[in-house]
Length: 304
Ligand SMILES: NC(=O)C1=CN([C@@H]2O[C@H](COP(=O)(O)OP(=O)(O)OC[C@H]3O[C@@H](n4cnc5c(N)ncnc54)[C@H](OP(=O)(O)O)[C@@H]3O)[C@@H](O)[C@H]2O)C=CC1
Ligand SMILES: CC(C)(CO)C(=O)C(=O)O
Image (cartoon, rainbow, N blue to C red; front, side, top):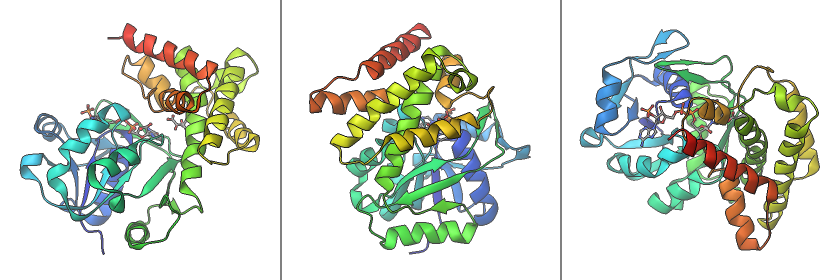
């Protein structure tokens, strides 16, 4: 199967970065944004700009739906339930789904709505995209890590990697995509949540101190939870992330910290929320993630 028509839901930092890249290579008629009627009207009246270029995107509401070969979810976690509903008229018998959301929950949500046979598992790494009003900027696009949860190399994986080869989009197919997703989730559970609670840039966790210790302890709790799911993460993975964090711009902010500073809801349910749910089922507690969860919910409440 050749992927010819791509619908993206979520015209944010990542959606615009991927949308503009793919649109330039496949044409405006083949790469379009999906949204509810209200958003579509809003989007059509104000062009999006990506790294200084006017994007001129196409937008389709459910009433104007065409069948997509691939639907890419690029909303934040809080928008996922409604996004699943909005894309319904764009889904055909052979439509495939890919989610670039952080965390390990969005694929299961798509599977529940549209069936596991159509869902690729993915996590995205190494990009520095940010959105301010109608402008998205990035220096690095990073790459998509993609695979099947059962590690198979089937027709749907072939169709999506063929699309990436055709358009030159950087990707990796790891041996075990679930481990990759958990590893990234471990990083986000540590650095995103701690920097968001402190409202501070990377410099805070690059030096020894209470915040850095808390971040490492939050990641260690993820190791414990991952073990119950037969995901083999180790202290060496934490060491890898500490080395990587040391290379980031000390003045930069995680996406969750940006959400808190802007008074927006956060993806805490994707990080501590997921960990606490599994730990409760398994019968143990996670003191650091409980603290972070409560603090972040308090911060969200304060900005309501
Ligand atoms: N930014 C980054 O560098 C990285 C982000 N991620 C992850 O990628 C995901 C997306 O992040 P990011 O691009 O930064 O998010 P943004 O907040 O920049 O964008 C999300 C977009 O989704 C739109 N949206 C929300 N709900 C709906 C809906 N129901 N229907 C249609 N559109 C909707 C919003 O539109 P509107 O503005 O109109 O409300 C918003 O523009 C997150 O899970 C994040 O953690 C992962 C790695 C890096
Ligand atoms: C990896 C990291 C921390 C990059 O900033 C990220 O995924 C985020 O900010 O959400």
